[in-house]
Image 1: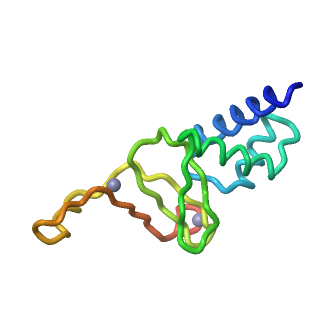
Image 2 (image 1 turned 60 degrees about the horizontal axis):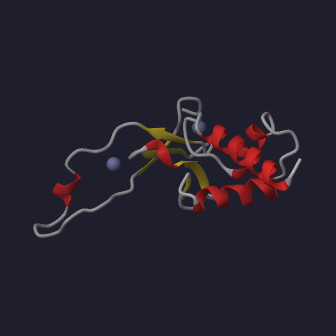
Length: 125
Ligand SMILES: [Zn+2]
Ligand SMILES: [Zn+2]
């Protein structure tokens, strides 16, 4: 198989993995799931492919303080995350918070926001 076709296969595998998740994943979690699609995909390849997908704006990273970066599909739209302090899983949240713009003083304009909730997931509580 040519290098180009291989790269395409790896890209498609990682895109497929990230399109069916409840939350952003760590590279080793992505690797474990991608191995079911492309046998023998190494962790270095996962990192390299994630970088390419990020450059193409197909994947973005999710930074939880004190945690290694996780990755998710860019087409998820506006959403927030819940971080379990026990198992360290990160879950997507569907809803947003109302009234955030009421927090800022008059004359200030909110352009964007990031919210991460921390606690215990259903399995850990
Ligand atoms: Zn948990
Ligand atoms: Zn929001």
